Length: 462
Image (cartoon, rainbow, N blue to C red; front, side, top):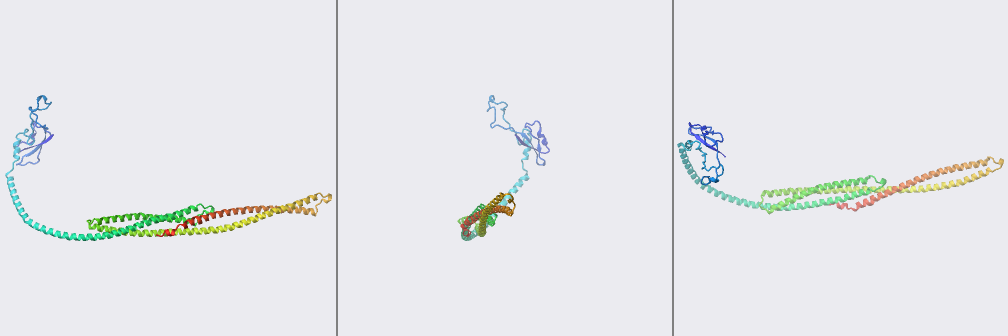
């Protein structure tokens, strides 16, 4: 443990370095330091670090400790404490010099007396002044207290009137905001009903597109009704998106309206709120009511716009389907006429083929007769077997019959080819007629009946 020890000496005595001699009983820890400035009437101070040994809680003496039980290296001599102020054991002459430093001078004694006298005079003067001002302060305090009570009573009366006024205003504003919230809630229900009503025409339109995909052949075309149905689907989806955008706004505005309604109800229940708070609630409520009214108008406009767009798309699609049904009916009538003509032609061609076959058979019999005659004339005797006019005529007849039969065979082939062509045409006409009948059934019985069964006019009226 280290401790700082102070030294001092008067000039021109020995310097401070004489305190650090080697024969000092206190072990030296650090270097010796002295004050930087000296005075003729004041000794120079110096200090150095010395080591201080810790002491036991009770002095160890020969009377308290038995030498037989004394621990090794434990001293039984009485302990001597170092003088930390003067370092007496180190330099005995230092005590006298330190005593001179603790004395006061006569000037200091006179200054103390004068200071005490001045303090007494000043305190007496202040006490007299304080006594004179106390009465004036008491009178002024009474006047100010009376005036404060009168002002407080007057302001409390005004405050009561203001609270009653704002209480009525808050009650009226509460009624208005409740009505506004009810309108907003009704508008929210109308908006949700409009969104639900839009889904039904959308599903009907998609069902019509699905039915029209089952058309066959050349009837599976990208016609006007299909374009109208696709445009109607796109229009209904856009209308639904518009309504869904206002759904979030309507929910947020309804939440704000209910929040300000709750705040106004709390303000009415607690009349101790500040006047500014009531005014702020009323202004906020008016702002929210204005926003709710504007939003309700926007929603009504959007619903009407959506209804008009849906109705136009719906009506245009119905007209397109009606026109398409009329076109199919006209085409069906023309096909029936063509089919009847083809059928008649087929009957005539078949009849012609039968006639050609009968003519060929008849000519075959004539050919046999001519051949029989010619063969019989071969058996004429001797000079009678000549090429006379009859012989030549029979040969010519045979050639004529052969050429006629060949012509009839060619015509028969032509008629049979024409018959096959007419049969193919009839088959194509029948298939086309069947496809048109299917398309007519889809457009008229499935699509139009489904669309006419839905009361679109009563649905879009909100």
